[in-house]
Image (cartoon, rainbow over all chains, first blue to last red; front, side):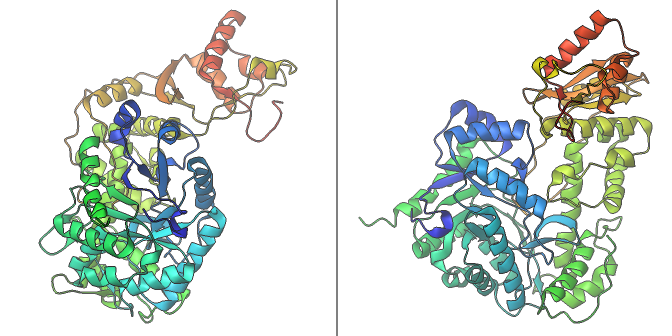
Amino acid sequence: MPANPFNGQTDYGIGLGLRVPHYQHILNKKPVCDWFEIISENFMCDAGRPLEVLDQILEQYRVVQHGVSMYFGSAEKLNREHLTKLKRLVKRTRTPWLSDHLCWGSVDGRYTHDLLPMPYTKAVARHTAQKIRQARDFLEVPIAVENVSSYAEFHASDMTEWEFLSEVVELADCGILLDVNNIYVSAMNHNFDPSDYLNHVPHHRVAQIHIAGHSKYEKYILDTHDHAVIDPVWKLYARAVQLVGPTATLLEWDAHIPSFNEVHHEALKANRFIQSLVPA
Amino acid sequence: MKPSKPTGSSKVSSRRDLLNLQRQVGGAIMRPLTPRWKMSPAARAVVAKFIKPNDRLTGFERLELYNWQYWYRLIDCLYDDYPGVRAILGERPFSKLCRDYLIRHPSTSYTLRNLGRQLPQFVRPPLARDMARLEWARIVAFDAEERPVVTADDLLDTKPDRLRLALQPYVTLLKLRYPLDDFLIALKRLNTEALRGEASNAVTSTKRKRVQTLRRPRPETVHVAVHRINNAIYYKRLTPAQFALLRALQAGRTLTQACARAGNPDELQRWFGTWAAFGWFCRRATRKSLI
């Protein structure tokens, strides 16, 4: 896997999201898995069972942190208490890079706990990039921002989502966590060609890729992470690895979670696309 | 949060513009749903100003998806944290309680762990209120800080009339009007642990599993310490004298003051031996010294 400054010069392969229903299986059976992604906020506590499990996982596996509430796109400043606890966790996990979403979710100290889409303008890109830089300077670890799936668009936007993402990561000089399922979901919801998205992001900045399943409704798609990956998303993934090279890849499965082996089997399907890149 | 009235243009060319957009759109997203679980018509002005329609959905319908998800997600979290209150109140009253609570106490933390912190003060019926206190104590016992345990050596040079011990932050002392520790254990046996999806930004429904029915406990005052050992949560029944002693220590009384009304020395020694073995005693947070 290609190493780059945005994933800490690592070469991680196929990973899984660490989820509670799999704890016992992982701790008891110690299955082979290249790495686990943890939701940072689930482990930013002071003590107790979450940290006990994390420490046991860290003894056996490589762990990468993924956050859900840094809200680089919120107009308000970064939350100092959040950053301090996050840094404590970074020291514990020694995560080679850290990711969170290109979104907003809080305003005036009230949290929606959602990943809300941004208005895509130059001014918003500058503001967001500045917050990413501040977070990286404080945390002292490379940061990658993830494109979110979205269900609404703003009149105020004067650029495409991929132009906005590119602008932000160039200004922040940070990495991209490219979620190909999110690209697919947003493409269907907003009527754009997902290939345009893939073709126009700065490929050298992709630190990691996410894949996941979603739920299709009559008039929209919701990013539910409760199914296997569908073929059109695998095709996008194949195109993504052609463009960016074989990259650390993680399957997200967060609801109606099947057995560890089933989830791992689904994730490992990514290998066929990665291996197809290797010259015969 | 009261949604702001739409003001000014929808152009976003500064941080101030972004804040204005987020206040208005965030206000609409966090606004309570109608009794039929629809977005309030009051959001129409915000939608018209900020949200584009597409060929399948109006701007209103698109923002409504986020409005639904906000309420589903947060109510879902309270379902996870307070299954006992839900079992006592029943499905509809609990759902209404969650809605009313979230209107009064929206999340002000980056973590959902703290969402239900103020529910015990918010619930009115005594039985449900006691259950909420017990269930919040469980959350505290699950992941609250553990400070270095005070050892016998630490106490050697300190006289009892100057010694002030603290209880570990993860220990909560509760005087309950009902034996709800037994009730909660029985309920847990009935329920499988609900698990929360974390990284998806979509929630499609709240947990609508049937409320488990258990016979309501009869009134009986019990004293309980909710704590953990080796990261497993326990309910330790206390006698009124033990409870009073521990509460006095927790309130900052000296060992001599706390033990003034307690039992005989042999009994006291036994109690302290048990509690020390649990690792309950630690240094007071604000002082380096134990005195």
